[in-house]
Amino acid sequence: MSQTPAPAAAAAPDAPWPRPAYAWYVVALLVVSYALGVVDRIVIGLLVEPIKADLGLSDTEIGIIQGLAFALFYTVFTLPVGLLIDRWKRVPIIWIGLAIWSAATVASGFAKSFWSLFAARVVMGAGESTTTPGSSSLIADYFPPHLRPRAYGIFAMGGSLGIGIAYLLGGAAIQIAESVQAMAPALLGGFRNWQLVFFIVGVPGVLLAGLMILTLKEPVRRGALAPPTRISLVPLWRELRTNRIALVTVMFGTIMNVMIVNAQLAWFPTLFVRVHEWQPKQIATSLALVGVPFGLLSAITAGWVLSVLAKRGRQDGPILVMMLQCAAWAVFGTAKCLAPTPELALVGHVCTSLFATWAVTSALTALNQVTPNQLRGQVVAVYTLFTGLVGVAVGSGAVGLLSDFVFTSPKGIAPSLAVVCFVGGVAGIAVLTYGRRGYQLAVQRAAAWGEGN
Image 1 (cartoon, rainbow, N blue to C red):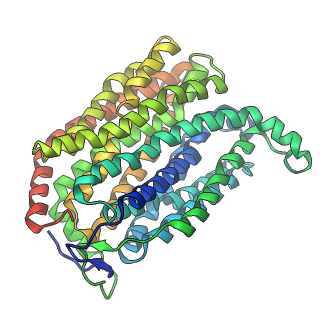
Image 2: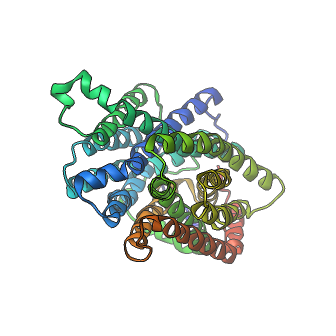
Image 3: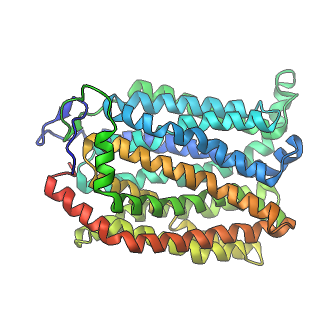
């Protein structure tokens, strides 16, 4: 494995780890940040019908706004951000990104056309490109190796929290929008309810960024050497080439899961509107009540399962966990989309929510396990690039295209979403099965080099 210089301020191998209480406080802030990012990203899924009506958009255009628009700069910025994370302080990168995407969410409320909403989502994606690489690298230097899967599992909890907050806050915002307008008619009277929702969910992120500035500390880097004298992608290329099978396997398995998750977040609420004729408030409350507790359970069990597998000597634990989530999507995800009643659809939603964060937790654990400290930010940035480019962009966009051109009836959203669930789940299982041995070899190489510190 390549041993390339990295930033200074490295800790000696026997240096004490940060105080556990403060380390978990840091994770808590990162969880809330992650959750707010998910809220800002997916609350638009509750607003599809009014946005379409006001801006005159098609399902394909809505799919592009939810997927490609966000993924565009999310992917473009990931590698530069990864380089910056490996060479500079990570804490400022994280709070600056949080402030940017929160401001972009507020800007979405001023959108008057497809292109203005598209532009706001592009900037939002740029800001959120800092979250996963920065948080992943930070956690690796706050926790010893045996605690990292648990810490990553808690961090992944931010996704489930964000989904629940998005549904609850989005539903509440829809209900109180008129009251908010009545409180300040001269200021807000000209805005639609869906625009006010963006204002309401964007402000908390700006406040959290201020808290991070005041209380978040940069930890020393472990296992890192002196900083390089010039920027070079050669060490990253060598690492990607050396561990190509393992990294491609982990990334592709996660991409399939992320693709399905984003397709669900973008279109599952709309499925309840068109197929089951539910109202947005009822949808938001039901999905939150079902998804949040089971999503949190998913985040807790993911880290626990990975730890148990590691203690039993299973070097392929992250791959097995990702395969289970792919199987859940192929079976339960497909079934809930095609369910004849909303109650059965919610039962299927429970089943998929139980595995909601398994792939992300596994991927972060796996990538940091086989990658040297000085390249972790860049490797996770590459991972973020591909999950954003394919997972985020393709998932919601594919459903929109299928709905507009293949399953063209209003209820065609159900088979459109089911196809993405089934195809993505089966493809993920196939690639993970093929690359499982390659990942095990990468773990053995990392152990031989003394990585994982």
